[in-house]
Each structure stands twice: as structure tokens, then as C-alpha cells.
Length: 311
Image (cartoon, rainbow, N blue to C red; front, side, top):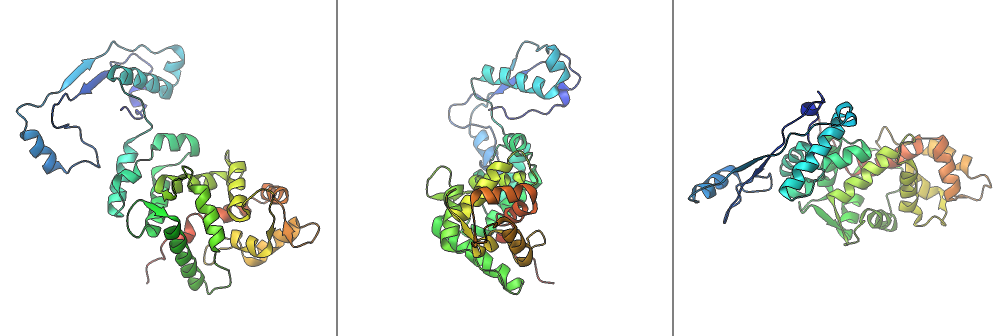
């Protein structure tokens, strides 16, 4: 299925000649993917066939419209749709970065298919690049000790709790670790398909949502809602001081808020001084203090990253 095309061939804004490739076969498909057999096995299987067919179909030249001539991305996407139609397949958001991420997954002992995330879609929605996704993958791998590419609720709680203890220990303690109820709440939010397991793609989307919401980004409101629900459980609930500390403070992290700063924000928001804050107060505070959401976003990645090597 055609993934994203590069804009280079379409930048001049002149007609192009689309060509589609097919590999007709009866027993073995010679098309290679990163998750497929290694090269020696691929060559051996091809040699076991009497003949390997390759079909090239030259489609009619595609002449761009005025809009396409000005926009190489639009031009390329439309040509891709014509090619997909000729092959009888759908377009996808895969790019060469997906292949590179599969190789990264192999090095991290994760299933290579877990790294197929359709980078073009993520780039459009979250402005994410391969380096960002790879960093999140390394964070996920530090939790997925069995290398299955997915975590059950118990595995999630155990892994994140252990990471919290490591973080507390490296920073000398002083910040309460997340409770099981809070970790379960985050798990339920991330498990969008409600399968009872958290795969890498779900973990990635939650992390990107938080990161792109920081600083008033286009996902700011969604990220705020996610952060609140992760601890409070509902928009009608209220947070106390201890919960706000767990929301904002992460020992040993330069982007985390100090306990003093977190309590200053709490007192600013808690106008009636009853020791609890509501969703509307939290949202208003986050709009004027972007460091609040940035601090929580670190709970999605940095807290679960493995400790730096000694020395």
C-alpha cells in the first residue's frame, strides 16, 4: 500500500509519469518488509520458485492543477491516490521513518510490528519526528521487560511504581510515589481500544498528546483534560495537595516543579482555602502557568525512563 511520498519529484510543479509495481506470485511473495524473513531466507525462497514475476504498469502522465503546482505535498498526495487506485489498495501514513523505527524496536527487543505507527499521520497531527518517537519507544521498552510490545494493567503498575521508587531514590526521596488508583486511571485513559492491554502506539499517542499540549499547542485543552482525569478520575472531582504534588513533582527531573513551586500554584488556585481545587480552577491556572502542564508531561516519559549509566 502506498505510504507517504517525498515532495522532491513534485516540487518543480510539472507533469510526472506514475509507475506502479506488482509481484504476481502463487506461493511466495517476494515483497520485503522489515518484519519479514531475513535476506538469506528471502533469497532462498525466491530461488525455490521456477520464475519470479515483476509487472510494471505505466499510468497516464499526471499533469498538476494550478493548486498542485504550487503545493508539492498536495501534488504528491494526489498522485499517490491515483497509484493506489490503480493497484486496488488503500493509501497509508507510513514513511521510511517507520522502517527505521522497526530497526530501533528490534534493538530494544520489542516486536518490530509494534513500531509501525504511520509517521506521516503523527507528523501531521502532532508535528512529531522520528527522534521523538524513538525516545518514547525507549521509555516504553524500559517498562516492557518481557518485550511483548504491550503491557497488562498489573505490569504497568509494577513497572511504573518501580521507576518511581528509582526516581525517588536518585533524588533522595521527598515526593510520594504514585498510588495504584492513579496509575490505573492513567492506564484506562491510554487504553483507548479497551482491550485491557496498553500497546506502544497507545502509549505513544498519550505522550505526544501531552507534549504537544504544552505551551498552548493545538492539543492544549485535550492535554489538560487528560492530566486532570489521570489523577482526579472525573471532571467533577477535586484534587488535594498530595495529589497535586504527585501531578507536578518528579524528583531528579529538571523540568519538574519543586515542591515549593507546586504548593505556590496550589495556593494561588485554591481561592477559598479549603485545601482542594476543581477542574475549572486547574484549567485556569494551566492557561496562565504553562509550566504546570509541562511538569505533568514529564510524568509520561521521564519518570519511566531507565536511570542514566553510572560514571
